[in-house]
Amino acid sequence: MAPSNKFNVGIIGYGLSAKVFQIPFVALTDSLVLHSIVQRSPSPGNSAPEDHPSVKHFTSIEPMLEDPEVDVIIISTPPNTHFETARDALRNGKHVLVEKPFVPTSAQAEELSALAAEKKRVLCVYQNRRWDSDFLTVKKLLREDTLGRIVEFETHFDRFRLEKPTTWKGQLGMDQAGGVLYDLGTHLLDQVYVLFGIPSSVSAKFLNQREGRIVTGGSDESEQPDSISAVLTYADTGLLVHVRISVVSVETKQPRFRIRGTKGSYQKSFLDPQEDQLRGGMAATDAQFGKEDESRYGRLCYVTEDGKIEEKVYPTVEPETYTKIFEGFAKALETGNKEDIPVPASQAVKVLRIIEALQESAKTGRDVTP
Image (spheres, rainbow, N blue to C red):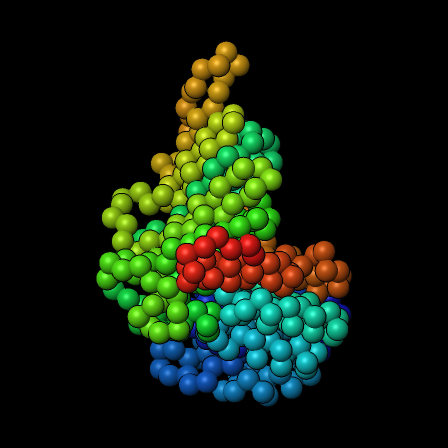
């Protein structure tokens, strides 16, 4: 065990997520200490022992879970391994941070949430895009009632990717938390849940845009989607939320948000820059990290006091950056308070229920209540 104000962190997996999104941020969080890494098969040019010679290294999971010096486990492996690994880590008395997508089903998420409560351990899901600056800008607009009552909310994750991924993202089916709905849809649906809660009903079409087919999302590989078009209905307010993911979007400015309200509308293109900056080698300590060029700001249309409609550039808020999820996680470790967990498993349960309802709708062609 680490000193009382420090928590030793063991990371399972050594892919892009661990290297780019987790290890650098553990290093920036005062109360977290990188203690050990599991990498099954280190190789020249891809070796945790070479990159981090001062920490302990394992080639299998069990010795790390049994190590009494490890306080926290970060799971950074493909999603079909998350449930069993998180369960075993909790049973061994470890706090756990799980990369998204969390687990394949809401039932599994509920089981892990209950186990964490039983063991009095912190269980958090790595939904880092809650700290995208464009999403924080949307939260600000809604919080300040700039747009009035929202009647239509459109959220996109569109790209031009005609080649199917060769990694697990293109190999695992939805029954294993693979595919576009879990990979990208989890981000969009989590943000929608944060803003509006659980919808009263959902409907979805699953698409294979690369081949030009409507698919059902069934277990056969040919029925797995690469694109999603979904509508979430909030009957109590009349709000419709459109969730769209496309791999055939030939745009120089990919759409991100389009929001319509009784007092104004907001449109935003381009994804938050943090992922590309990190992939490109920028450190999270760089003064420009998370900051967006003014040319990428969104546009706000609003009704003036005399009833005219005017338009202006609406600056993206100053970035809080992905350091916030680690700071929040560390605070929860220190306090033990459920309220301090930045993305509790109980919220992931609800997002997974939305995902499961979308799958049912795509199969049956009916509206489904989550």
